[in-house]
Length: 346
Length: 281
Image (tube, rainbow over all chains, first blue to last red; front, side):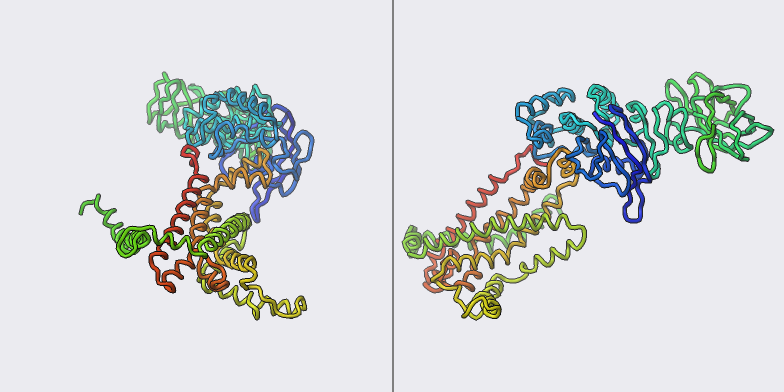
């Protein structure tokens, strides 16, 4: 059990800076998800923590101890790789026991720990098989069991579910969450899948362009995005944005006046999530382009003041394309962003 | 044209070539070995075995293979590991290391003869440095052990690169993630080599060992150049009986012995370094 402290960590490759001065603390037993699009630096950061790459600047601490100079095997970590890296020349048993054997643990203890980890991942019937005889989902379970068997201080997972099909991914997501909660291990989990991040994390760190933009609980990342990027990245469909102009102490977006933050700007951005809109007589009006019934809801894509605008509405509302409808944003769900810095305005 | 027949048609020229130039001579040699004056007999083998040089030739050939092949394997593994770890100049180093492959075995033998003979480069250098007072004779029938070592050195210099090239290719095929996983799960550099590199290189180790061992039993020109007839070897005896003693039957018997040893070692390596079907990637 350990806390991870990352202080001013930077990683440069020749002329390219992959990580810009990262500061992050992962609390003991916390499940932190690093979320971002490909190339944002999330895997690089994970590899620095693992010791597979070395930071150009800054300090990484695990359990209060500086680990910058330590090789991966001395960091009390275990890792699940994106392509599983289950050794093809070893049986499932030997794969799961690999790390324990490297620690020169007596073989009866190894057997006991391997069996326990295999049971946690429901693969105890596969112990004699080789990786070539396993499906992708089973290999993934072996990779997780191998990490759990180590009973590490810190568990690092690099997009562990990204190679599974959608159905299996959903199943594994719930199962992994359960197993990891039980194991009480500090976990850093890298993914580009926001649903995975939202559903599993204690805390999400959203990364973009080598920076951590926001690190907060899933619900506050969703409700109170720290920047326009986070609002646009998280949520499906993403947040709606409209330019708002200053007029008579209010902000006017698409011809509607709203109370907004008092900032010294002429134009700021108005933002609202698609599900925070209700049909109304007054509010934002627009022409409906497409209506997509989704079962419980319908997704309405429309033009509001020349801007693309989406709303998730009750499916029994009769709305057809070509119609003009008016939607009122829930006042407490309206967010504002600075168009220059892209940061949230209070 | 029938599409089904196409692969066979395309293979036909090579098949015909192999039948005419390999299968037919091989069968012919086998027949020669077992016949004398048109009759089936063991006489050729009796003559071969009862000749005083047979045991020496067999022992020398086996000994040479036993010294050369393991050393080449160890050296190649070491060199391949270095090359694989290199970030820059890797191709250049590989080209330089493989230069001896471009030299014929007889030429290689002569190069080492030029170094080791009485008025060769080694003696000149040692004499020039004042290490020795007068040139020494290394390559003499009085020092069979030195002859063996000289041939082994020349063989290692000449043909290690064959093994190296195969191993470098095999090593390059191992995905980096396996090493990273091994590293995270506690394996240091040596453990990674033993637990990941070696087992995952089985197929290329197998190919390299089979190829190199077969070639080791066919060693001929290097020995002739360095030791002449003072160090009998199996292939040398084939040559002796065929061209000097004009006994094709005995020469054929020798050839079959070499073939037999080669097949035995091939089967041995296929078995020892087999990858279980289920463990294949």
